[in-house]
Structures are given as structure tokens and as C-alpha cells.
Length: 122
Image 1 (cartoon, rainbow, N blue to C red):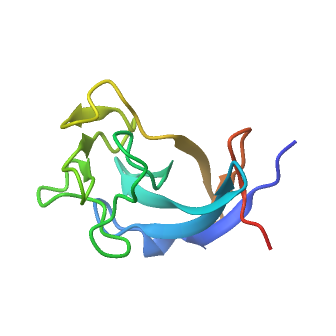
Image 2: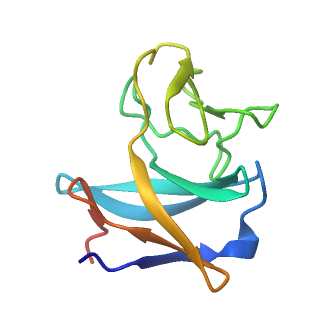
Image 3: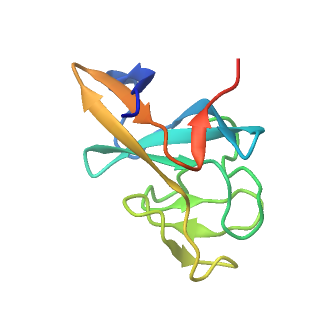
């Protein structure tokens, strides 16, 4: 069974607001993932565009485009649905972000590693 890993206090995520980045390992590579709040739920993804493996955020933690309805890749303009990670427009059509399971309990946000996204190396 996987062990839940602390990300942040739940109050630090506002609906459609700034996201929180956290370190992960994918295929022995250090990279980041992020969590945002959308639809009153925390949503987490690997911080990697489905079009090309580039981080999405404009500046650290800025993942939503100006309307707050989509996550947007700062490099390619690809748009993603925040609740599913599915590409909604741009060069990633048919692609999707890698979803990371998150849990909100006792006013804290945790993530759960899977077969692809592992805890950051020490």
C-alpha cells in the first residue's frame, strides 16, 4: 500500500488560484508535480505538457489561464481541463496530463505515488 505524502495545508489552495508545486521522480528523473483547487476539490498533475515535456506554469504556481477555467501551458498555449487533465485545445489534442491521486483530510493535502510518479529522491 502506498504511503500518502504531505503537500500543503488545504487553506493554501484557493478555487482557481495559484497552485502548489511539489518534487517527484519519474523514470529516475527529478521533476515537479502540482496541485490546484478546482470544483472545490484538489487536483494534482505531473507538471509536464502533453505536447512536449515542458513545465506548464507561467511563473511558479501560475497554472490557470486568465478566465480561471483551464490550465494552460505557458510555452505552447495548450489548454487542459482542470478536473480531468484532458487537453481542451492547442497542440496537445487528444493528450492529457498525468493525474496524481490527491487526498484532502484534516485540513491538509497529500499525494499518493503510483507506478509512474514516485517520491522525490533524497
